[in-house]
Image 1: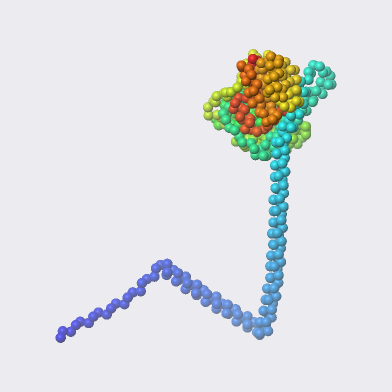
Image 2: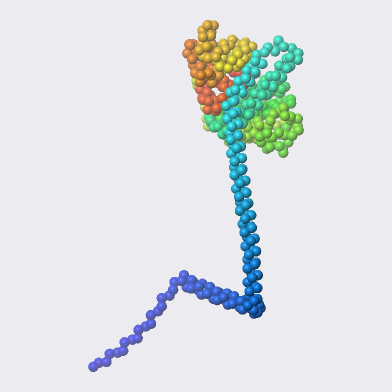
Length: 476
């Protein structure tokens, strides 16, 4: 039998090599184990040394008692600290609650003040308008000496009161957040032409040479709010220029139109140039008294400039004068003149000296009588009526065709001034021109009337501004 060769012994199987991550973990665990063993040995050595040092069970008891007392004291200290922290937290919560309640009370008070000023604006402005108009209707030639001086001072005092009331109402509107800019393209001359007649009389009375440089540039902004800004700047310049010149002009730049108000007044130190735009801030000394104002005009300029995204500039030198300016965005292209019913802007210069037949419609007897008396002093024939129906009856009885209807916007029984105008205009072949008076500060109303090309005269009425509008009305 053939012998089989022996089978080769099987090779021992190799253990699979651990993944690198597993090797790393094992090494770390072994290292931690070695470190733990060293720590345990060190602790045991410390315990043994402590026993050797203390020498007896009584010593152990004393050490434990001391440790317990230490723990008790630390525990009391932590409890006291926690109690103090708890009381401080409760105190802070009480303070935060009190501050929150105080803020709510202040907000409610501010809201009440704003609502009061808005609601009372009509009642405040009506008697003031009557007083201004009755004073304007007085014939200065019939008064001489000291009485004439008193009459002029009364006019100045009422005009100052009117400006202050307008400023306070502007602040109330800004505080209420009810102002929403109505941006549009318009020529800057549309704003300056309205402002110029109003301030020419004021500057003349103050002995100031007021000059306006004409500009035909179109800008993109809110016409009413921009007008408010410029009024405050011009009024401020006249107020702080004892004598000299105030110049209003425009400079065109690539990124906008700069409308600047230069004056040769008392000037302002550099340290005050930013602070003057803060509400109620007044530069000390320098001839500025309480009678000069309450420091709100420039703060209104600042807030409206932020609202309209206008860049403001101010340069001043004490004793030589100041320059205040705002930069307005240029319009993309010139717009078209507003179309609508005949307005005060539609007149020709040759009509300036001709008397007009004017209807005054207002449910406030003082305003309509004072305005009628003022118009008669200026050489016009005025009919004062409480309603459109009353006006039509008087016109037909006198066989008159009106050249102009001046109506308050809010009449009795909820009738609006534009509806009163329409009722009068329907009775005549040629519709008269129209001017609306109002004490309503609602910017939407102002924008609506501007869109229709209807001049708006805010109450209290400014005689110089009204007279300038009348000078542009063509007779029938």
